[in-house]
Length: 329
Image (cartoon, rainbow, N blue to C red; front, side):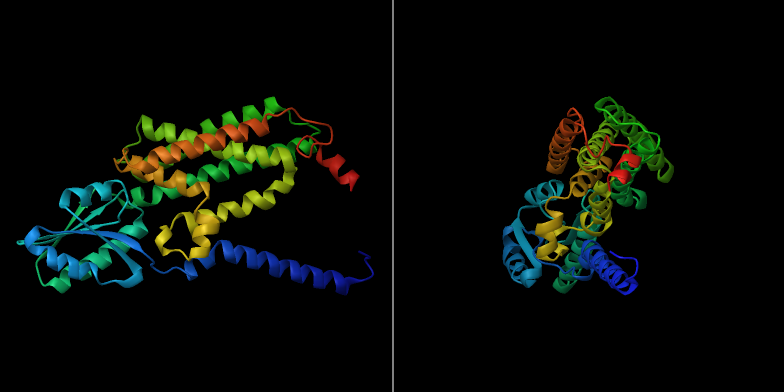
């Protein structure tokens, strides 16, 4: 574009700014602004004499609540597997609202509000029982640790491309492998230190450490693969992906607009990592999301490493120094 046409340049930049703002708004604030309950899974259990009361209760809630009639044992098992976010146990002596600290805090909050209101409407004494109780740090740590591991790998990967390019370094597969290994170990160690600083009572055992390390390897491998294919231009993808973590992955799917649920929540790696880590930190290692998280993260690591370590070719964006890229344009 000719420098003699500043008006056209200004108009183009204005449009570009609006496009970027729209995309970021969709990825972040839009998920929260459009959040509303839709099919929140809850369970209600009752002995045979009180089954009619449970049936009447399950008939209320409309599309916002998805009730499941169970026995007390089945309800607690479903809560442990995170198939439901809370259980209302009806007994002749009163009503118990059963919750779990291993469930996403947004799901637990919603369940507590609905179940407590339903129990109060029945007019019987109400008590609350929390399984796997979570501290404030325990509720915050899974998503925070996941986001921090992503940021650590992102800074290191982009640094190898930018700083290495300025120094005339052409990253090879050995450099990328060394960076993935280094940033994974150091990043997992740093996050572990933060977890213990936030709450020394968190059960940071071998399972948690292994899961953190696997998450770091998966994230840094994925980032290395995109940076190897696109060079620094991959930041246009990797940067906005980070914004999905608190806005989308931190929500339960039943609170998200169906568009966000299908297009973002369904595949974002942050939610697999965060929910698996939440279960491990809260003593629910048998929950299905732990195995699911390990499977997804392992696949990301294998595919990412395969692409990142593929032999470089001449003209590869990730192996061409920054000075050469500028000269080429």
